[in-house]
Image (tube, rainbow, N blue to C red; front, side, top):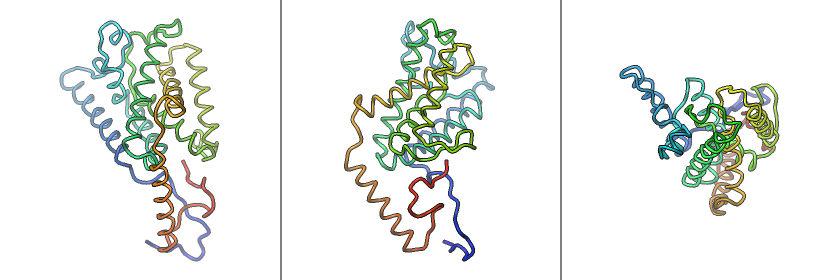
Amino acid sequence: MRRPSATSTFAYSFGPGPLTPAIKAIVYANVAVFLADWIIARAVGISLPDVFGLRPVAVVQGLQVWQVATYMFLHGGVFHILFNMLALWMFGVELERMWGSRFFTRFYFVCGIGAGIVQIVASLTPYGGSSWVVPTVGASGAVYGVLLAYAMYFPNRPIYLYFVFPVPAKYFVMIMGAIAFLAAADGSGSGVAHMAHLGGLLVAYLYLKGGGRTPHLLSEIRYKYLKWRINRMRRRFDVYSGGRANDIDRRVH
């Protein structure tokens, strides 16, 4: 590890570090399905979202219940999957380190499936529009749940809104939730499943606050101990993180 020069006053770091096991598996699965959809659509003209995307009419009337889980692995384009997986890495890695892979995986799927159920319920209301028959795809519902959990555990960590304005995580989630709520209430049919986003936030909150078992205390103690050991090794081998040593909010998202 190269020692910083004497004239350097600070170092810059980005992101939470390498992919953790569960997030790595989720990212790989999403990318594999995205590539498979692209290849199959061009080879035989079959679109995977038509079969595995979340269509409420197919779930309610056709009993194709698997769609409430499979829709999470399908995406509508390169930027759609890119931003979802980027957000999952940025906000999920530290949670998985703290909770453990098993609890994080369960939490992720609970949020994603819960968001899908909320989308189905919303499609039955006057605000549902064409969502009753149009497939919903994407991991956004689950990612919104991960974002809410991140804000609950690290409420004052700065998140850069539109990559420009630093906002504490707790307020960032409020802003994103308000945007999704207003967009859903508008019902203008923007092509974005705003109710699924709201569902991810709601299910994550209920699950962590009372709807499900919270991470075992031993996991959090193990995480704190591991973090202490990492910081000790940094001091021992002159490894410098970005920002001030006493600033817990120095990580840039």
